Structure formats: C-alpha cells, structure tokens
Amino acid sequence: MKKSIIYSIVITSLLSVGCSEEFLDPVRNTAVITSEDISNLAGNNPALVAGTLDGISSFMVQPGGSTSTARHYDLGQKGIDIYLDLLSGDMALSANSYGWYQNIANLVTTVDFTREENRIIWNYYYKIINISNDVINNLGGNDAVPASMSSRHIMGQAKASRAYAYFYLTQIFQREYDPTQEILPFYDGVQAIPAKVPASQIYDLILEDLTQSVEYLSDFNRTLKNQIDVNVAKGLLAYTHAAMGNYSQAKLVSEDIINTSGYPLTTVGQLSFPGSGSGFNNVNSPSWMWGYDITVEMGHQLVNWWGQVDYYTFSYQWAGDRKVIDSGLYAAIPSNDVRRSQFGTSGVTAGMPINKFFDPGRTAGGQQAITTDYIFMRIEEFYLLSAESAAKSGDESTAKNRLKQLMSIRLGGQANADAYVNPLTGQALTDAIYFQTKVEFWGEGKSYLAMKRNKATVLRGSNHVFRSNQSFLHNIDEMSFQIPQTEFNNNPSITTQN
Image (cartoon, rainbow, N blue to C red; front, side, top):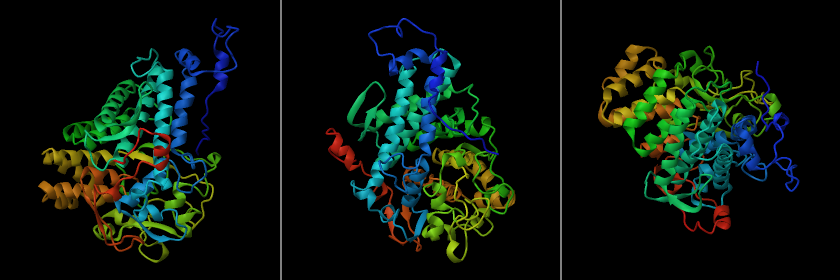
C-alpha cells in the first residue's frame, strides 16, 4: 500500500557538515542559517536544497496554502483546475447549495479584481516562483552549472517548477498570446521587476528554463511521481510551444515524449468503471506521468479536490455543489465511446463523473480521510497535442495517425477509429482534435488551455445554474482572470489590468 511521505527540510543534515572558519567566526551569529550558508553548503549537501524543492510539490496539493484563512476552494493546482474547467464551460455547476464556485461559474470573478479567487491563483503561482528562485539561487543562480549530479537534478526540477508557474500565469492572466503585451511582474532570482513586462520576456524565461531542465534531468530517475522528471519537463515545453503557436516544435517535443518515455495509453478498462484498473485515483496508473500520492497522514478531508468532484467522497459534490459534464458536450459523445459511460445518467448523479473519478469504496459520501490521488499529467495529452500541432502545421498524416491510436481504444476498435478519422481534413480535423481533447480530459484542468490555443468560443449547455445556453469568445474579459486587488494595493508599479 501507500507509504507515508512527509516533506520537510532535513535540518539534521547539517550535522554532517564539517566545521569551517566561517562557522567559527565569533562575530557572526552561527545560530542563524542563511541563504548564503545553504548556497555554500549545497554542493556537498544537496539535501539542504532538496528539502526546499520538495516543499514545492507539497505546496501544489496544500489546502488553504494561498490564503491567510482556509477557503474551501483554495486547493493548490487541482483547485485552480476546477476554476479553469468551469470557465471553459465543459464543467457545469448544475447545483449550488454552498456557493463556493458561484462567482466563477457566473463569470463574476473574472471581471472583478476584488474577488479572492484571483488572489488565490496569483499567490499560488508566485509562491512557487519564489521558492523555485530560492532553490536556484542556493545552487549558484540562473547561470550556474551544478558540479554534482544530484545538484544538477535539483536545479533541473527547480527551473521546471518556475517555468510551470509562469506558464500557467500567462495562460490565466493574458487573454490570448501576444508577445508584445506587458502582462506580468518578472522575478527570476536576479532581476526583480515589479512592473509588468512583455509576454515575450516571460516566455523566453519559460523556454530557457525548460530547455535546461530537459538537459539536466536526462539521467534523473525519480522515486516519486510528484517529482518533475525529464518527461514532465518536455511536456511543459510542448505546451509552451503550442501556446505560442510554435506548432512544429510542439509536435516535435510531443512525439519525443510518445516515442521515448515508455508510458502506455490508458486501457479501455482503466477509462471507466467497472473496468479493470478504473478510477483515475491511483498515482501508480501506468499512463500517469505526473501526480501526487495522497495519504491519510496528510490529513486531507473535507477541503480537497476529491470532495469537489467525487460523489463517493464526503464533501460538496455529494452534499449539493454539483459539478457535472456540460449537457451539450455529453450529447456530442457517441454511444459507442467508452468515455460516455464515465458519467452518471439519472437521478442526483446525472452528469457527475461517477465512473471516472471515484473513491474505490463507491459509497455515497463515504470517503472522509482522503487517500485517492491527484493527477497532473498523463501520456494522452501528448497524443492529442501532437495531433493538434500536426494538423495546424499541415501534417495531417501524423495528426490522423495519433488520433486513430487514441480513438481505437475509446471507440471499440481500429475499424471504428478509421471510420471516424479518415474523412476528416482541414478545419474539420482540427475541430475534431479539439473536441476529443475536451472529452478526454474532462475534470483534469486541460480544456481551458486548449480553448485558448484554439481561439475557441465557449458554448454552455442547458444544465448550468449560471449563464446557461450562452456563448463566450475566448478572448473576452470573462475568459481570463484579473490581477488581484492586493497586487494593486501592494505594488505601485501595477496600475492597469491586462
């Protein structure tokens, strides 16, 4: 079963450090360990920095980590995934008993910078950037070349973490890709620019960080899937190229992941209950590239992503804040597609992902101490991203082949996949890939990224409590978040929204 993993900076590792003249300096307060100390010692004792790096992955799943008071939708990355899924329209808030998500679903938060959801997102990603900068600086800074293998691996993970945070900030706070638009403050551990800098400066850092991460992590064999390895870094790089419209590069990196990572496609049984291995609840699932092992010792209960999406967990989905698949999206899924069976069809669970995301006990409101795991990335993302990038760069053969590989599992065989894909060409092919991305990653926080890349129009179905049957262009105010009021209050260099 799962092992209890508790991350902290290993203070006892200091005991293995030999005394130096600096530590014997009577003028200096040796009871205080400074960043300079850690930087000087990191080469011989990478655990000093690794503890801080582990803190990043712990923060990604920490409830209430971005606000001073516990908020039941402040859940780390997976909490933001719910915001994005609701905004994309693919996730419908179909009942709103407790009100946690009403201002997201009603598109109020995205036009009101005083709403705390904006602050939660902003604080979350900039905290990750700050921690990543600390790790990088403690290893010598942006331009340092770590001498040891372990330090090189830590540097690679830290730079990928910083890139991950900046990537999501660009997607969430800029309406659409424009390299000349000033969008975000810039902090790389050396430069601190509180004013908004052009998107090109942010993207340059993301690309540089991820390119170096791929190099530094090429021989890193991780022990836990919450750690960023070379394939996760490549995945973030592929997403970045696609967001920038660099489709040939996005296809190249996606194909590299498919061909070299060794991750298999999710099987038909794993896609939906009662299939063997179904549930999207176990970090050890073979197709998962990045995720987090949630254990009892972590103390996750009511305030948790599972409580927001899983009817079989004791929390809001079961109690009355229902998040379901958009009725229009569901209606468009063919009857022979196994993913249609991921969702309930009647009664209180109609539209809920009761056969995709579920506690294995499958008792309504049953799971209280959370042990079901978080998914951040899986291999199917790069089959569809390769297909999308290939279609957009004129390589329809690759696009169709990758789409067929995916659909043969979901549509019950190669003949059905061929019949679906072969007639597609031009915009129809691109539209089909976008549709499959929405269906495949329902509830996984990926549809919003695809909506931005495809410059799509969100069309809500009839089962949304708020704004049902309405449509929204991808680049209107309502489809991106606002720089929060707290940033305006604390940073006089920020005077306008994007």
